[in-house]
Length: 68
Image (cartoon, rainbow, N blue to C red; front, side, top):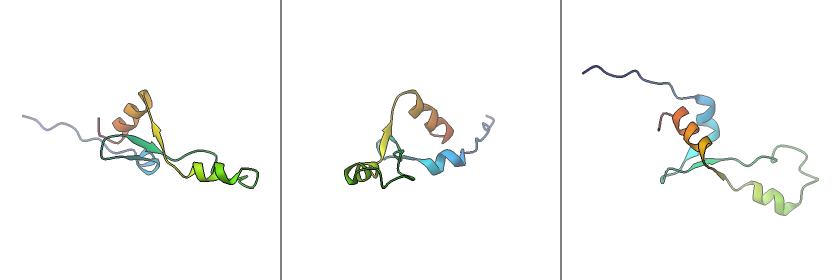
């Protein structure tokens, strides 16, 4: 039997997304980079919490990481 071709991991995706042990795709929250003095302290704390990617995008990201 012939070996199948190997696929390279998309390094940009690997840096931006993490896969949990249960297979969820997690991403950083937007709006955390700049103009933070106008945002409430509560909002800034909430931005620290990673968000889950769902649906079609989660499948696409897993494909790019070579996990699907």
